[in-house]
Length: 311
Image 1 (cartoon, rainbow, N blue to C red):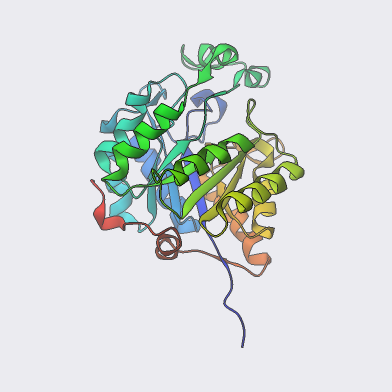
Image 2: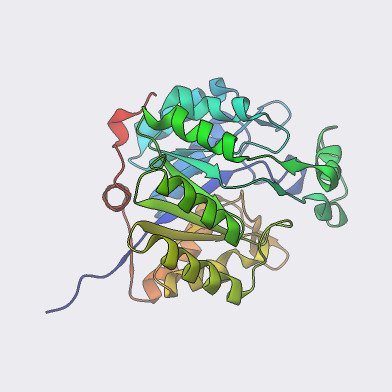
């Protein structure tokens, strides 16, 4: 008898706080653009879409729930994809501000960073020179003296605030120590298994994108969580597809999208999120594996279901 093929969950991070509107003409900015990009990514094979919001006038990252309320119902109406809101927002925001979309709209999944860290975006200034909006260049330049604050108190506050909503978390780990922080909250019963661990590679201030680091992350998570977690990875920039491929080979899941990388090939912008989803889907299927549907992702991650959200 043939064994059933392993299902690989693709998360697509549609638009985030790292890249500014001037960096690529393909970054979705308005609620309609974000909704359309998410639907296209889902149609290409993403089981989960990870969503930030932007001010539609100037493209600045915002955690104002009114913008999430603009695009989330449109995505839900046209797709069964799992919707995942950020609680990271941007390093310039307060924890209370970052929490509001997940707290008020009660998505199936929300992201949560497992530690305070330097979050260096300023090297991008060497590659991008012309900016459309006044906030963009100072936002990048100021990251050389900016800490992305996620204390133990902050993390516990977000976890406990959303617990009644039965929102599960995409637990973002930018370094080995973040895995130990996740284990700390699991041991205290503040977060419940199975944990959805998203290992992040290649952000300045976090762990690098060497393959040895990917293996170390997986080995550490296996030791800490055993069968009580689901592993996924994202590689920043040009490492997106190589790191995702490595995760697939190691039994993990993947995250792609324009939040994490603007590129389709060296010097060539990805024209949509769906382009990146299609690329990693081709690799997954070439490895004789299958892409998980939203329903399968809900079962694997033990989610509450798309009918139990607040939008």
